[in-house]
Image (cartoon, rainbow, N blue to C red):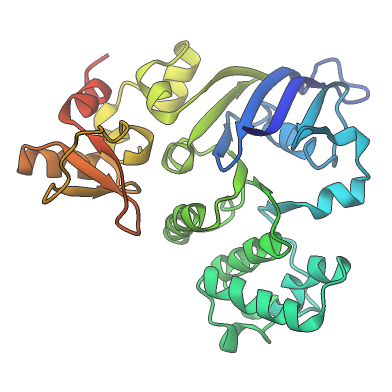
Length: 318
């Protein structure tokens, strides 16, 4: 079921001769991680901001849980959507706990419930509550601040999370670490996420599906695997580096390529892969074992299989 639906959405700003977003139509299923990818100025952030009505569409409609967002009170709409931005936006005069508690307080939660939620979320983003609760943003590193920003966005348990270049201002090592955490959180919180990035590697690594934008238009909307193996045109091919397949193997998760678990598959003793591992790691294990790999979740639950033929299809010279 689609949680978020865009129908012919467009935006032209006053005094602009060109549309920032043009006739965008696509759906985001509940629980999906969808990335908006494209060069600077292609309309990614504008499209994202129209979901929580920081920008109003010039045409078209956006539906959240089947309801046209224009029919909703703006404040009520924003309170049911988590929002994380590159600048983080923590209140400097509030402690970490107070920053996370902002939306629950606005929604009238009782203090014991808020305190429990703050501790739960700090544990979730791997910040020890006893140490970080009373600290202020200025006392945190950039990566720690971004974790608090994510915890704040999740505080009121929204169905939808909007993330606008959240890791763009962070150094490469911390960024990779936060991407790892994002994959872990994705599997544990089961939220629908719309994520803006211009970083191709980040999009390929995190997304279930990618919206490729150019000059405000959707060029391709597909899985990372299909975008790499079947780019719609030369723009997409060049953007994702589809010809450099050996490099791309390390950026595509097993979960995006695996096939459904066959009914008669005997999994006893079968070699396993994590759904979050990349295809380069998968290839190494398949070649070492010579077997079809069983794909499992972090809880060791079987969810699919990966075969050598699938990776060959991705790494074949184009």
